[in-house]
Image (cartoon, rainbow, N blue to C red; front, top):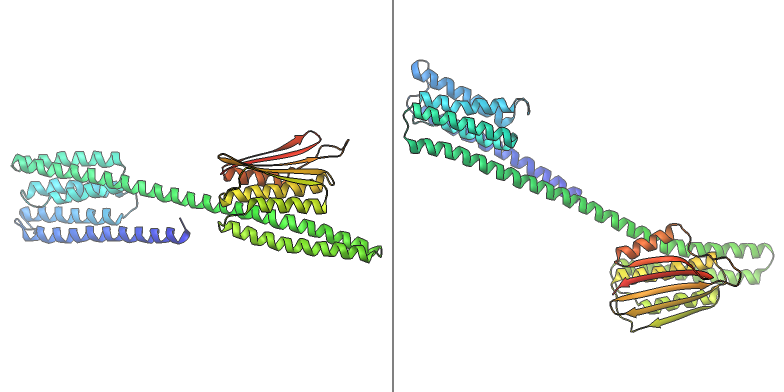
Length: 377
């Protein structure tokens, strides 16, 4: 979930809460008007005074629990007073609307208190209201209806809270998934930056340093050759950048041609190299194709660094259900076994292969080093 979406959800939630408060207060106004229109009406003497006291006390508790005056600590007391106003008004005003205060208290308790506290208050309130109706001589169906409505409102409130809690969990999960997707995309971009820029710029830097050393020795002709090679590397770097952008957009890659070009480039710059294509080439997913291409590129680059001059054998095999790339270098007799460094390149290749659903392995093999990558496709 984006930050804008979270803000919109928060605004919507606040508006909904304000509307619920306003609706509750509107109901209170309507109920108060009805109480003043019914007999016995609230007054300053006799039963009218008792009705007036119950209406005022219930209204104050209603407003307090609706606006949550005093915070969560006082909320149960406001609900309890409003709940008790129903049975009290029923005793002094049988057949009136006193039970509505108990109904409002149940609705508020189910939304603001714990489910246990709301259930206890609802049970006690239903018992008191039924007792008050029985004392007032109300018929059994009326008593049953009032108690049943209170229990129904508790059930509705519990279901609504469960639905809201599930929606909140879904929002949190969506937010975590969005964060994970953003982190994965950052990691993907970081791998592309490393594979493109680090490979091109390191080779370019090496060529320019060599050219500078040759110029210091007055070997301008040799330096010109190196500078020309550096220019070619720079152009190749731009090509790689365009290819990386294309891969990020999801465009398919001509994998056999690209790996063949990498092998030819190694052969021209560093030493003997062979490329073998086995099976019928087919289109792969952008992630799988890019993972195989970057593995070949990084493997050949590391051979240049750690085993210069050694022969390389590159094999790309299209089998049923998967594509396998192996890059193996053969060092000269007596040369130490060497290959991929343990830096970000190796980690990035393994991460890239695993994210695309494949496997990556690299390690010593005979007198050289073997890189083995298998991707589904």
